[in-house]
Amino acid sequence: MRGLSTAGSPHEEWDAAHGSERLDFPDPAPAGGGSLWQLAVEPSPRGTGLGRRLLAPAESRIVALGSTQVVIDTSSQATDLVDRYCRRGYAPVGTWRWDVTKYDSVVLMKNLPPTTS
Image 1: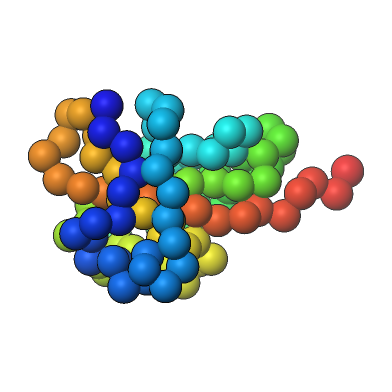
Image 2: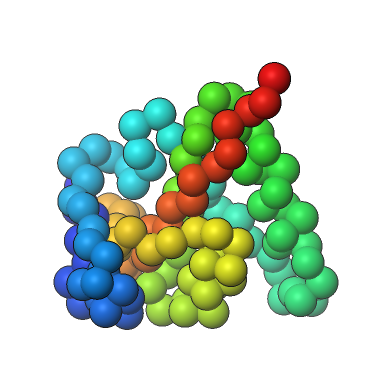
C-alpha cells in the first residue's frame, strides 16, 4: 500500500499552503467518513449536469448512513475533474497511489451537513 502524500502532485502549491496528511490505512476515507468510487459519465452527456445529479444522491446517502465527510479521488492528470469537484465543495487534501494504478490520484474531501431528523 502506498499512502497519501502531496509531493509532486499538480496541487502541490495548494498542499503547501494548506497542508496534507499521510493516511496509514488501505483507503483515503477518513475514519467514519464515506467514499465515492468510480463516478464517471460517458462523453456524450457531459456538460448536461448528469454528474452533479449523480453526485447529490450519493452524498445524501452517505449522510443518511451517518457520515459527515466524504472523499473522492481522481487522476492527478484530470485537472478539469479536480476543478469540478472543487466547485461542488470538495477540497484537495493530498494524493493517493492505489496499488493497482500507475498514477497518483488527487484525494478531495468535503464536509457534509449532518442529518436534521
